[in-house]
Amino acid sequence: MADETPETEQTEPTAEAPAAAAPVHKPAATKAETREERARLAHVANSQRPSRTAEQRDAERRAERAKKAVARRRRREQEKVKRAAAGPGTGTPPAEPKVSSPQTRIGTVVSAKPDKTIVVRIDLARRHRKYEKIVRSTSKLHVHDEANDANEGDRVRVVESRPLSRTKRWNLVDVLERAK
Image (cartoon, rainbow, N blue to C red; front, side):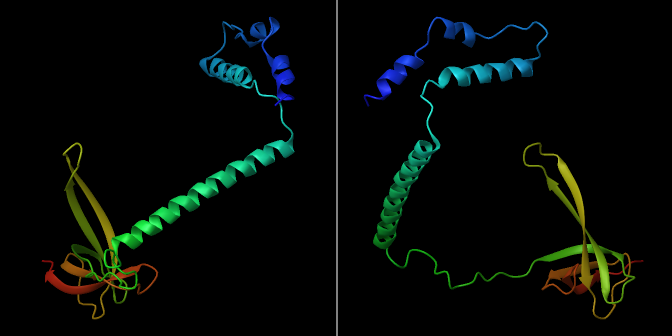
């Protein structure tokens, strides 16, 4: 503490320091330059602390990290106690996988040229949440058609499946309406 007092006396602003810290006015300066200058000058004005060695900065950093680690451990212990007090049956056990039904889509066959594969266009029309305008979007799905049953223009129902190839993740369920 006694060592810091002379250093703070040396770093106190003198009559020369405010003149150096005052922003220099440049009439042709852009806003970005003046903003940068102001930030630099504010940094210089705020750095009234004495300069520290690398070892001192490292020691401060380690002390701060140790303090945060203690706080983390304390918080985790509190959470553990809270979970134990809540009881074992309050949460879902992680061993149970979530069972969900595969998604289904209805679309129009755009291409049936590849063998056992069709390309289906899915048209979506949804109301925008904020602007309430109807927004239309389309997506194309590559669908596995084992029997080569569907042709271009047909309305089909497809169901989600495991990956069958690099692009195919859907199976054909049935043809709803044949193209005329």
